[in-house]
Image (cartoon, rainbow, N blue to C red; front, top):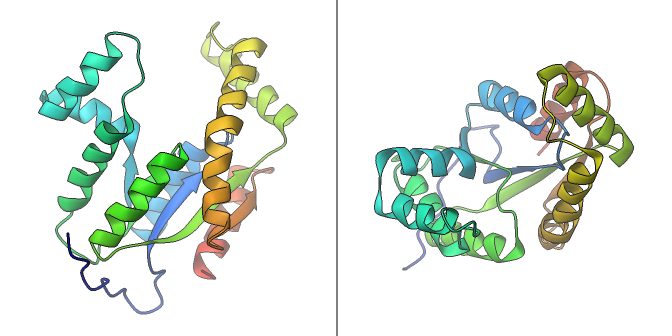
Length: 204
């Protein structure tokens, strides 16, 4: 597909799409919603995409379900296909996208870079919420106790962090080489973290 001219942005608004990342328990979901409300981005979460396609029974949804039913990971090309359809459905070239927790692997990042480039778009900034691991474990265990969950054991939490470091840390390094990454201190109140993120966006 031929590359198109990059969409123009509103005066003073950040150019490019935003990728929002962080380890388990960092509070990314809460902050993503606040960023969406403050800056008008379209939040794109692959978890939401999966649920939507499964509910509607689309071809991609059925294909994803066939892997999930076997306990296997959904292949990157299926996930990217859902992301591609979502971006193409936006209509306006002015619409800015915030990718929430995606891409999760370098292969997905490379595919996303290509997909955006073909549509005259690009990643403009990668914001990474950072919190010490022991604090994250404390948060997750406290949340689990409050919600009456028993599946978030220290061992399970540890495995989730290991997966994040093995698969997602290289994605951050991929974008750091392009000088797109800004790490944000995620320690403090929700409002404190929101303020730091807002400043990072406004000085983009």
